[in-house]
Amino acid sequence: MADAELMVWIDQDLCTGDGICSEIAPDVFQERSDGVWVVKEIASHWGADLVFDGEQAPDGSRGVARVPAAVLGEVVEAAEECPGECIMIEPFDQATFDKRS
Image (cartoon, rainbow, N blue to C red; front, side, top):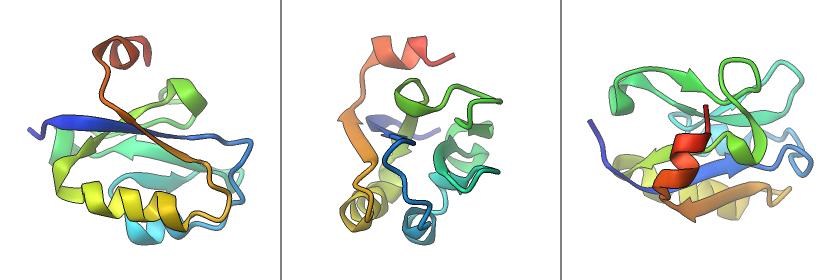
């Protein structure tokens, strides 16, 4: 399994629903049914699929996904290109990680 140095989440209040994030980093971003984007962890990186959509797992600032090293550059690019500036990237924090479920 991958190691995480960073975590990512989306501020849904700022999300414009453009979807550039998923075009750049499809392993980390997914559209929710209301057109807002959320973060996810996929089995190929973490051993299980988990979508932080407010149903399967928390969304917003509590819905933090680990960023796999293999796609770190893509996640940073997605945050830089996001028109809503809603993608938040933070250092991995075990306490925050433990509170997400």
